[in-house]
Image (cartoon, rainbow, N blue to C red):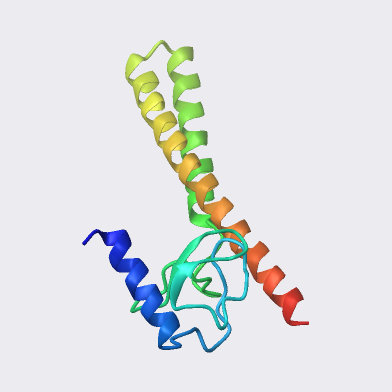
Length: 137
């Protein structure tokens, strides 16, 4: 039996045995209230897959998401270091400083990409939290 078929059978069994989400839980993608829906399925609002069996996959958790301040600081610090090393290396014609500056530039690129990604996740989390607060009022 294929995985999809097993999952469909579990969802059907949940529906037949009236195993539904009994409390307010929200979709991690759009913030839709999943109360009274099957324990594992797709959000009717956005189609995002969720599950409350064992783990809370695809369920909005109101805690644990902080702004990526350490990554932003690391990006700024490594960017400054790269700039100083490259500028200083060019000024005194020191290849080692230029190479080290390029290494710091690569570190800056990597931490910058991670910071942007985590900031997008943080902002999405805040957007969903605001939507849930507005719906509860």
